[in-house]
Image 1 (cartoon, rainbow, N blue to C red):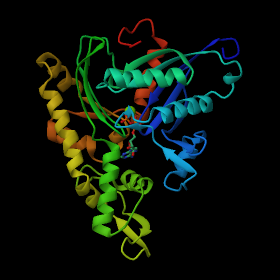
Image 2 (cartoon, protein in one colour; image 1 turned 90 degrees about the vertical axis):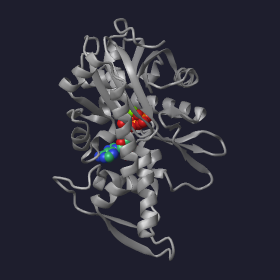
Image 3 (cartoon, rainbow, N blue to C red; image 1 turned 135 degrees about the vertical axis):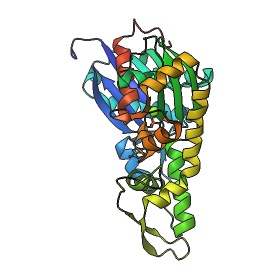
Image 4 (cartoon, protein in one colour; image 1 turned 45 degrees about the vertical axis):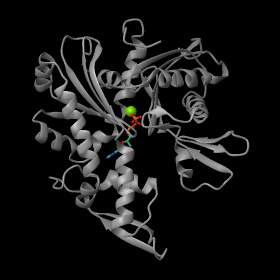
Length: 339
Ligand SMILES: Nc1ncnc2c1ncn2[C@@H]1O[C@H](COP(=O)(O)OP(=O)(O)OP(=O)(O)O)[C@@H](O)[C@H]1O
Ligand SMILES: [Mg+2]
């Protein structure tokens, strides 16, 4: 294909934490949603992985920006630079021919007109000619492999970096959805706060995220507990270096408030679900997607609390992206795509 096709087709999950790009059914890019900019010229210095390495280490000539906050574009210029940069990185060869670019981009289900417009505009400015959008929970369901067009209810819970979205899908549409702006970034912030209060240690966002991935837990008792995670950092009183072993139990306590808000959102989405669909969901279980699905003990906690089985999607971090890829292949068939 490549050489002779004049339309480049990309499916994009533009996430608060990570952007994933799919071309011809394959993942061609999976990088953090961050861009480093030269503060004098406004030009891009680095994007994705390289920009993330610079995070927290900048001087006044360089600034790193995460253009999305809570699932939506918060910095329009930076978003455009980032999308352009990531597309170029994902498809270095085809740029020679600059073919026309068709894109399917995932958007949060609670998006306002203005937010949808922002995604469309940045995608177009980044080179997209033919831009389609798709609600992320629908994309997650497609990515998980659910039959979204069937007369059957399925519930998907997508816990990303910036927002958690819960949706019930049936007959090719979103029957009901609930979106809250409590997600992975908030857990990371809870951990930063905890390290400061309990250990007098200042830690950056990157370190707090590492703590979360290693010893983050939604339960105070885990069947397969991880070993304590040793964190190095400055004592905030003395500025002297120190070393603190952090246990999953203490992290489970410090993120408890945020986790219970996510839990409450799932319960409230269930309450709003019509009975026939509710019965399907009890039978099928509920699917967890997004990076938050990987939090230790979360599936068990929700299963025990709610009494419905929660399944972690295969590759939860990639479910939305894979679903946008499926949508791209079925552009003429799926009428839930937004133009
Ligand atoms: N093993 C893990 N345990 C807990 N959290 C994790 C783990 N791995 C990744 N995460 C978190 O998942 C989040 C990223 O998930 P994801 O890529 O699905 O978000 P996103 O799609 O970029 O954000 P959004 O959908 O909110 O715009 C980050 O907050 C990250 O710290
Ligand atoms: Mg996401």
